[in-house]
Length: 167
Image 1 (tube, rainbow, N blue to C red):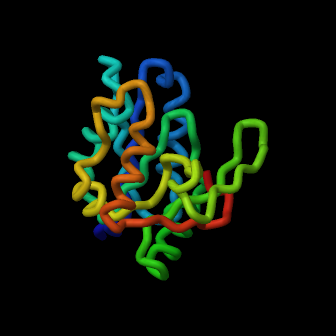
Image 2 (cartoon, rainbow, N blue to C red):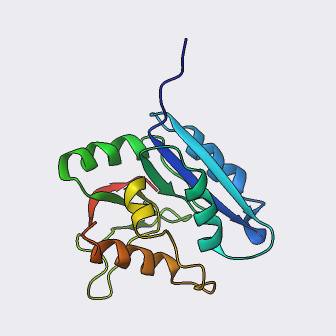
């Protein structure tokens, strides 16, 4: 019996300061209700999250990518619920999130304008990720995720909020 085709490539950059928590992120990615491939990328040379994410993009074989930081966790229905909304809207999908203390953060309905943003974690068609050449590796001190999403938007690939805390 063949396994169902994976829906999303979940890419997890693992910097040296996050090695101790990465197993939990990987486990949460593996527990999705839809089949996914999990691509952990160790950044032992400390080249930055953009570098690690781009190496994951190179390895991705699925129609969608999800970028998950090594110190974050996905709820088991993350990919399933985001895919449902993507199929309705044709947009990439991001969600609300909860911090480690249980505080809920509502993502903005209109991200990347007027100083509004969402977490790097979103379900995005892999073709879109590749069309904008992934993340800018020159932004090693931060901001590479914001630049990536603004680049997506300027290319006409906008996101939509799923108002559920799935991250």
